[in-house]
Amino acid sequence: MKKCQICGKPATVNFTQIIDDEMKNIDLCDECAAKHGLFEQNGSPLSVLAALGEAMFGSIQKDMAARGLICSSCGCTPTIFKETGRLGCKNCYKDLNPLIEKIVESSQKGMRHIGKQLHSHSESECTCGTTKSPPTHSGACECNSPECKLDKLKLELERAITEERYEDAAVLRDEIKNV
Amino acid sequence: MSELCKLLFRNDQTSASMPIVVSSRIRLARNLSGYKFPRHATHMELSRVGEICRSVLVGCKLLKEPKIFAIDGLSATERCALVEAHLCSIELSKSEFGSSLLVANDNSTAIMFNEEDHLRIQAFRQDLDFKSMWLAIGELDDYIAHSMDIAYDDNYGFLTSCPTNVGTGMRGSVMLHLPGLVVTGQINAVISAMQKLGFVVRGLFGEGTSAFGSIFQISNQYTLGMSEIDIISRLYQVIISVIANEELARKWLLKNRNLLVYDNIGRSFGLLKWSYTMGSEEAIRHLSNMRLAIDYGFLPQAWRAGLDNLMVNVQPSHIQLADDKQLSVEERDIRRAMVIRKFFEKIPSLKF
Image (cartoon, rainbow over all chains, first blue to last red; front, side, top):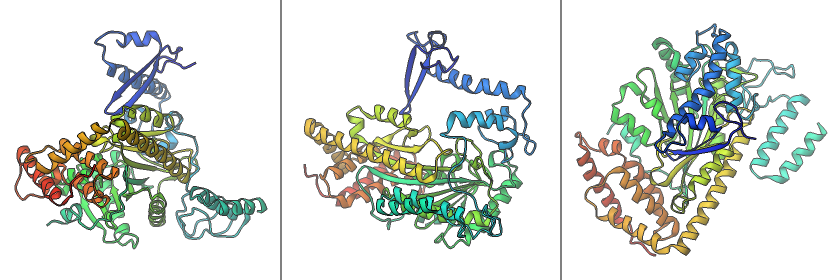
């Protein structure tokens, strides 16, 4: 059963509002719907959206403030993030991690990056133990170790599927099995 | 003519235009490792980041004839014109210090410095060629990652100032012309379905803007937990299905409401050809009907690319920039109607 997006009780009302051609869909319980004037003839639907934002972020923020979270590098806090909508620096991802995790959980598809890897410098060490070649668009190391070869083949397979080259994809799939 | 005007009023744009699709774009968000993100940075830090980005990118062989514009050195009209041309975001255009815009490769690549993130790398096309766009932007991204220390985390991927962009830092978006779905009243159902699939639908100029002329932007919501190729291929599939729905809606309209179609297109044609004053919203509405007329085959296909250019060139700041003196709203409306009449002098008559 769907839950009220403001208080978490079972939802009984689905509220839809189109603002600037964007459709907003909210599930609410009777109590919250009545509280925000949804059943009144002149009730402002915008107040429901504002309340929803407050409910979603407000509770996270109170929780974080109680834990005294602050970025040791730039001084950014959950309150500053709420005001500006932006983090201060890369270190915020470590020091404000409980906040980041909650935001990522509610707004992203997964919790881990599975896309292109960063190869920052040609001198850096590859996980296979060899020195990495200069960065390439494929995101794969150019050495011939089984780990890297497998990574490279997987990327090529993904690309072949995207480009609808199914015969190539079948060959690549077999090669992956052999590695 | 200023460098900016030369860039905005280009006449040699390729005519890769296609029905329903207005343009597509891939954007990557990247930050430098040792500096605060722009919104929290001091003026000195912003200047330093700007200098590093400029010095690395000016010499980049992947960028043909790069032009860099310091945003605080542009007038309000020039900034708005860059937004109208979709080269720059509204956020960057409002920047007060330390932001720049680099435009290169015949306007098909633009990099924003010190917008929400230190670097926003963008590639544009007028069709759905995501493959060439991804290869071009990926190569540029590799060059940047090789030349600068980029903020990256093994778990979260590319670190961005807003966690809604973290991971790939990638946003793919397609601008679609959907009058069929608007007129048949199906657009809200499509928007709702897009949202359920993890895509965001916005108006003509992105976040918080209206869908003038039945033009909508569809882009991916998720940037973490999906690979770039996965994001692009899902976006592509979704776009193809919206296009199929739009085609069905257009066929239905022509079969069941043909008089309405002819009347809307015919009125717009007449107004565009003969008006002596016209506001920008009204112009976009009628030009949108002309794009539909071309797609239906009532006008030759060859005019679509020119029409797309005209849709940008009739925006308020473009009209102002094309004139030497400051224009009032009324003068702009007169000037706009003149630009449109000139374009329509050459266009053949409608063939229903």
